[in-house]
Each structure stands twice: as structure tokens, then as C-alpha cells.
Length: 403
Image (tube, rainbow, N blue to C red; front, side, top):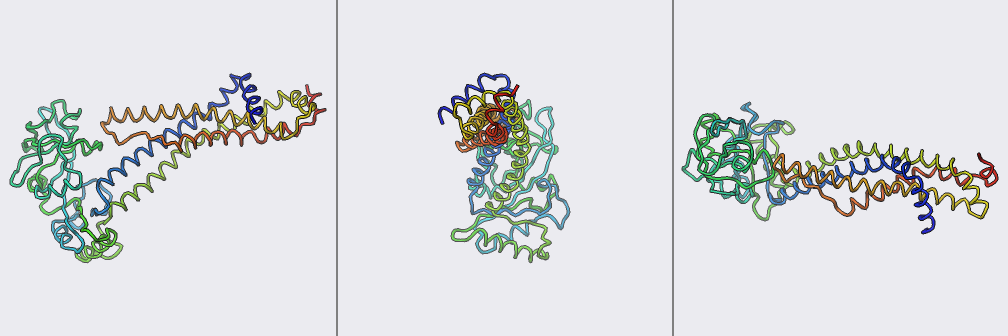
């Protein structure tokens, strides 16, 4: 095997330019595949970590209409305070809290922006702490009895949303009402959440005229209860409470595990499509290797005849050409992996600097690197099968007479 490898390596080295041109399709394809898979896997890992922090004992109830939070205005479609109070009394529910949200106009100094505004009840602060949500980088959360106090996302205080930073103890305007900033939330990595503003729920209801709405309801399951069973119980009882038919519910009830599974399924499909597109380059690269190996067979016909004349078997000729094509794929794959790692890390850096998020982290597990190398070798070897078979079938006398 060592002799086959060395012979194949020397043959490729003699044709440097052609070998490099042949490998272009392979390393472009492998680079794209490695970069896409690493970024996708990194993003999935980050989101799974977020769900792990949320915990498996949580249930999320939302309007079932696909729309941004707080954008649903039809009375029959929104969740209400009555729904929240009803859910709090269901067996297996340890605690439940809701928040309201809209997009609103925020003014800091002379600058004005449209951003996400959330309304939360100060009495639920402990609940949100347990959710790892209302964690302060600086200052504190607004307290019971306080009205025009606000907590801002990390990017509003330290990012580039406003030139005049909305730091602690500064005053901002929300829909024309002045609020004093009492807290800055820790960076979450979610650009939307890091640019959000949170105010007491009762003040939010006055400003946005939402006296009864709950945009989302979060439930913490009591110990000893199965989240799946409690979720089914909530769905059944809430459907009856809202006088809705089965299959026609205007709300959805999902556990954190179900949300993660739904995300993973959707993300898997998107990633498969992207990798499939990148694989087209690998197909082109394989055709390039096949073309190069057919040319090599024609150029080296006399050489093949000489090898057969001195005792080389058909299997020897076959292996020499397979090693050459496999080596083309392997080297192309190695270069592609290095380019892919560079692309993945560059995308990670750009996302961190431009978007201010650390959710997009390139992840390069050993099986991705090894798999890419093996795959590129197989692409090369498979592309060289037919040219290798053609070379092996040449008769010595015909090969030696070939001009």
C-alpha cells in the first residue's frame, strides 16, 4: 500500500497545475459544507444551552396565530388576564406569570427608535429570575409600587442603538412618557432582547391601551408532575374555559422540550438544504477528477503497457489510479477544511462585532473534520473508478503500440 501511495503522490506532483485545478471543485464544496455545518451546529448548541437554562419543567402558552409578540389585536385571539388566573389554578401548576409586549417608539436625547417594549408585573420578579430572564448587569429591577421606572437591554446601555447611551439613572421617553432607567439587563446574545425596554405592566397597559391582554404566559410545573401531562391538561381545560372546539384553538401550549424539538426539526431541514446546495460543488469536483483521470490514462498508455509487460497485474494498475484520484479528493478536502474553518470563524467574528450576539459560534467537532476528509477521499476514489478500470483493461501490446 505504501508503494501505491508513493507512486500516486509522485504522479500528481509531476502534474502540479492540473492537480490544483482539478481540486478546486472539491475544496470549494468541502469548505462550504464544513462552514455551514459548523455554524449550524454552533447555533443549535447555543439555543440548546438556552433551553437547558430555561429548564424542562416550563410550559409556554401563546396565541396560535403566527405574528410578532403583541401584534395580535383581535379580541377573540388574544390571551387575557382571566386566562392567566385560570391557568394558575390548574393542578400541577406551581406558578404562572404573563407579560405583555408591543413595538413602541423610544427616545433617548434627540434620537428616536422603534424597539420592543415589554410590560412585566414587579410581583413576578422572582419568577423571572428563576427563568434566568430578568438578570441585571447593573442596577435593579423595578419594584412593586413604582410606575415610571424602566429596565433596558444591554445594547441600549452599552451598544450602538443610541449615540446618547441609555445608561443607569438616565431618562428615556416611551411613547411620549418619561421613564427613569433603574436597571440594565445582562447581555443575552439575542439582538432583539438586548435592545428591548421593560416597564411595569400596569403602566404598559395604560400607555398601549391593553387593559386585559397577556402576550405570553409562562408556567412553572410543580415537582412530581410530568410537563407533558400538565401541558395536555392545560390545553384541554383552557379550551373549555375559552369555549373553543378541539382543533380550532386560538392558542398553543408547548413544553420547553417540544419547542426545542420543533426548532431542531426546522433547523435540520434548513441545514440539509444548505448542505445540499454546497454539495453541488462536490459533484462538479468529482466530475473534474474523473476528467483528469481519463486524461491521465490516455497520456500514460505506454507507461501502463510497460508496467504490464514487466509483470504488473490489472489490480495493481487499478489501485494506482484509484489512489491517485482518492489522493486528489483527500488533499482537496484537507484544503477545503482549512478554508471552511476560516470561513466559519470569520462569520462568527462578524456576527459578534456587527450584531453584538454570541449565539453564532462556529463548532468544529472531530467527527466533522474526519467525516469531511473521508467524504472527500471517497468522492475522489469513486470518481476515479471508471478511468482506473479503463486503464486496468488495457492490453500490454496495444498499450505499447499507442501513439
